[in-house]
Image 1 (tube, one colour):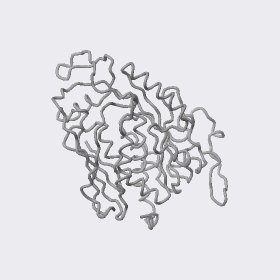
Image 2: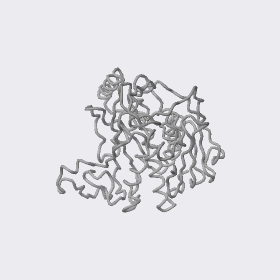
Image 3: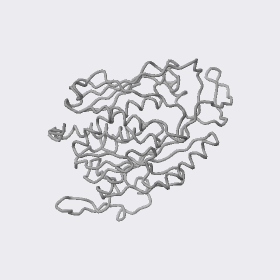
Image 4: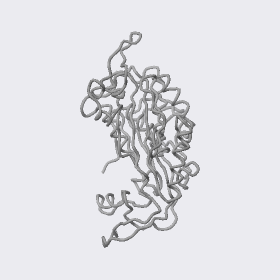
Amino acid sequence: MTSTFGRNIRITVFGEAQGECIGITCDGLPAGMPVDMQAMKAAIAKRKAYGDDSTETKPEDIPHIISGMTGGATNGAPLTIIFENKKPSGESPLIFRPSHADYTAYTKLGGYNDHRAGGHFSGRLTAVIAALGSVLREALKATGVHIGTHVSQCGDVRDDDMPETDVLDIMEKLTAVENKAFAVFDDEKGEEMRELIDAAAEEGDTVGGVLETAVIGLPVGVGSPFFDSLEGVLAHLMFAVPGVKGVEFGMGFGFGYLNGSEANDQWVNEDGAVRTKSNMSGGINGGISNGMPVIFRTAFRPAPTVHTKQQTVDPVTHEEKELELKAHLDPAIFHRARIIVDSMTAIAVFDLMLDMKRDIWKGAF
């Protein structure tokens, strides 16, 4: 089992939800990149619970950088960030919770895995992704690349769509939701989504949702055909986010309803720059960025911990039995996951951009 990703940068996530600490190490970062601790803490705060829309547990997340930084900037050594864990109280018996990783982890690892609160499979570990992502997002901003996400859908309620081609409009909308606890373009739609979340919580249930992300300012040429396509690397990291069960780029599955003449993005000359009239391909052709905004969506399943009776099997006897979980309810996780999607996007884009000429980073830091 491995918890490492990357080619030009190599990141490794380590720790368990109720172990001594969780952490991340990133090797291969250019030296001299600023590390803004306030921006890091702000990013980490976005994954915390807010009001009645999220779980009642609110652990204090304080990042500690133990290597790779000198004088507020990366120093060329591996950057390592850790978070100390709050010590658990009491024992945590092994149970196979429906749609959790309890059974698969137990079977794959021969029962040696730390199963407490999900162990290494817990969403708790996304804190370290948010921490590293804040560093990479700031570095990308210095090169003119901006990343942002909004809540696109919950149940049958949809927010306004991301503009397809207008970079200024996208920037304006993403800036407006950057610091919202519930990041929707249309606040009335946001309230309708919250009503759905509250209704599910009243029943001891949970709801899923869809996030929509844009990467703007990405130069032409990021990505490769086949195995290192921009879509492939982004999708690889999106599916590492707990709860993600679907990813689509541009029109995505909507292409199944169109003819080629309707689906093509036609080329135009816009003030000397090659652009497309539409952006149905989501800013990517042949696995390579085409200079248009990269737009994709991630679908999150409802959190699997619910307060209704469900069926499971006993870990020892394999006898069927009834299970009623008493753990804290998290009626919605997708709105808190937007910072993780942004962070994973930054990791993917940063790694792929290092394939390009190194002078793209000159003068950026």
